[in-house]
Image (cartoon, rainbow, N blue to C red; front, side):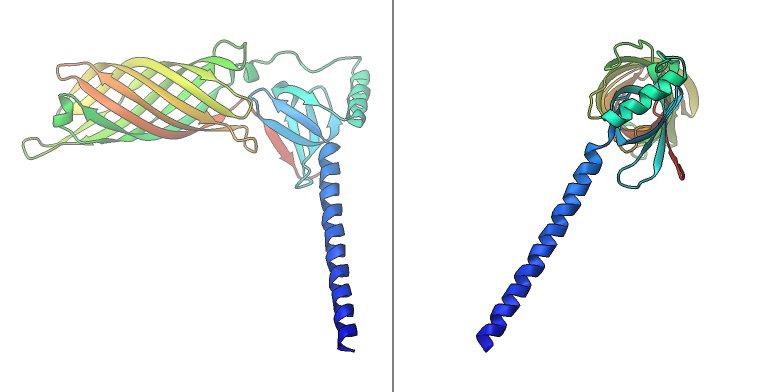
Length: 278
């Protein structure tokens, strides 16, 4: 009798396990089917958005996020490419017929220029003659830049303006006070924009730096840096940065600095908005 009970329990365990496996398989299959029946939207900055196309107009498209089931509106001027299912293609063709065969807008300045506004806090380590006088400086800079050669999108030549601020305390008892610098630089930035959102770059610039250390002087300044930007697929309108470089201020006492910054920028070329309802 004990053997019969053990056999029944074993059968019950096997049945429960099989049911669990079947349910898990059905869930995986449902997720795959939802993904397969969805549009893939590639934005001008290389980010990819996936969802079911539920509406199309000349100005914008609306997709349903497969995870949240919420509607997202994407302006057509920010779209580089679309991969649609057969049903979605028929929806687009039908919408185009209503607009007398008009297609997606050709070119728009915003996605081509790709303007960005950001903030980069960081440090400046002095070396050379000034390195024996002042300690490491803390501060950061604001920046605004845009792509001045619209094509090709993947290789960008950007021009920008960057005002900043650095504060240095002095070393030892032979000196008093502090050193404050306000570099104002115009720069050129050479960027490679990859499909996965990684954007390595080289930056070279120059300008002036008001220096306040008891007396005030305005020093001609040169700066150069290499860096890496990253645009997450989930946040295509945001770019994160890490950057290292050098800055040289030329005056009676030349100031040489090694700089290191991290930062974030808002990208005006990527506009994907959500909608609570359909």
